[in-house]
Amino acid sequence: MKKKILFVINTLGRAGAETALITLLKKLPENEYDISLYVLCGQGELVRELPTYVHLLNRHFCWESVLSKKGKFLLFKTVLIKNFCHGAFFHNLSYLFLNRKNTPLEKLLWRIVSDGSERFDTHFDLAVSYIEGGSAYYVHDHVSAAKKAAFIHVDYVQAGYTRRLDKDCYVDFDRIFAVSNETAGVFAGVYPECQQKLSVFHNLIDTEAIRQKALSPAEKSMHEGIRLLTVGRLTPQKGFDCAVYALKLLLEKQYPVYWYIIGEGPEYGRLTQLARSLHVEDHFIFLGMQTNPYPYFKMADFYIHATRFEGKSIAIQEAQVLGCAIAASDCSGNREQIVSGVDGLLCPFSPEGIANAVEYLIEHPQTAQSFGREAAQKACHFENDIHMIRDLLYLP
Image 1: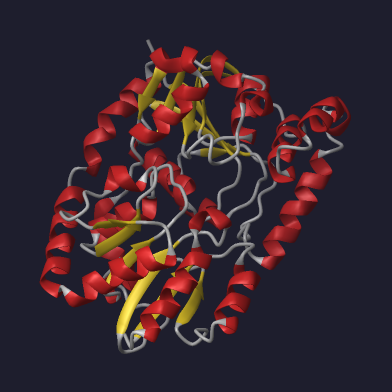
Image 2 (image 1 turned 90 degrees about the horizontal axis):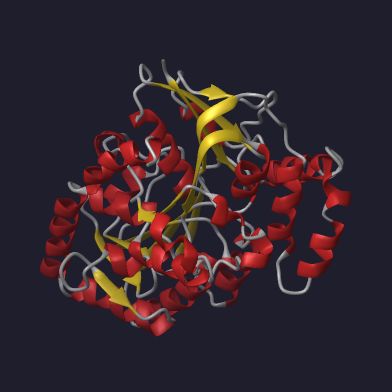
């Protein structure tokens, strides 16, 4: 008899954790498991890539990107409706009041979204919260399952989570999976009593599919010159503001650099204004969300990932698969993915630090090529963690 497994995630937009979830679902044999997925906000373009054997439990689902203008409006509408389902808003008044000063509203709302979401009578053998916030609260409070597991994809402290915000929900999970050693260490510092049930489960990526998609033609062309690429949501965490200043420094040194950005997010307006104010708008180029970003990795000279903090970057893994020379900020997550001077460069998170790293790659082309070759070799080992799926499904 097939084991019943439920995965829960907040949204299904084209981002790192969501992409990793799709890959994980494709790795699970349909003849062994009856797999269901519930998306709290019922929205996201990656729903098109769900394996056909995965049961989507949402009665209504919107394929619109959660980061597009229309998508953000629809997301707001969904959250507003959930305020009045199951009395979610009124039940959480004291919670909202106690946490209002030190917690961003978007994080407080995940509790309401969780409590206002659909409930299901099915009893599962395993329920998995695949991301922090709402999905963890939902699996903890509203799912009936023999075993429960939760994934941690971010630096728990830097991302602004606290025990009070989460109501200590992780204490009750049977297993907790962090996507990197540093992510696990930070989480254990907040929840020391969870140390024994905390394991590292690296993000899974489909290396062969990435290589095949990279062979397709890109939708948009790139300028002649030195082409940099960064992929990520346009949020403060991703440090694009620092990248704009770094680009200014490189152009002042007469390097013919064009920096391409793939992604959407709330910082778009501020970043475009910043680029204009520094007179680099013709060189800091937004490509928006790309269904297939991989041809751009192949076209770029260097992949740059200068973020304030990370859990474990899917974009860095993808760049490694495609043999890119990489420079990344020296922060949690990135440190675990790159051996500086061997398969890439780690640099200080500052305009000067980023610009100096890019300049080094430009001035040392043979070393940059060596970084790319080493990165591609490292990518061959990403699939080695696939055995941990068994640990996930058969909890002791």
